[in-house]
Image (cartoon, rainbow, N blue to C red; front, top):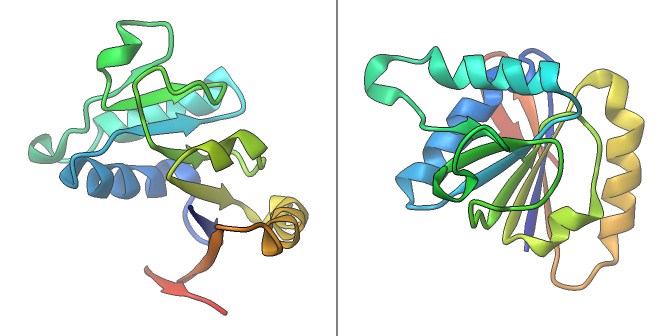
Length: 145
């Protein structure tokens, strides 16, 4: 299981999630995106709608349609009703339920760095977990130590 830590120093989660979602969809996967409140889910939904027309990412907020059909499901909890094997934690809060997925994307802004450090250390000794750290360097993502 792989956990990717994304330190958001330039762009908010709403600008990063669409690229992650597109890569997962291109590979035939599904994604569950977990946020902390309805306001954040609304921002994420708007970001997924606002891309170029040819790159529209089909999605829905949990409970607003047939959740099981959604390639990208936005939710307040970690129940993958859409059958997703990938999860993105968009609010900087680590949830151990993410370890039940094949891959987790943990996005955290500067004010949640302590949460990320705690999660990084907690996962250090866990068997079968590969951790990766990504940081923004200008407009590009670079894998850190």
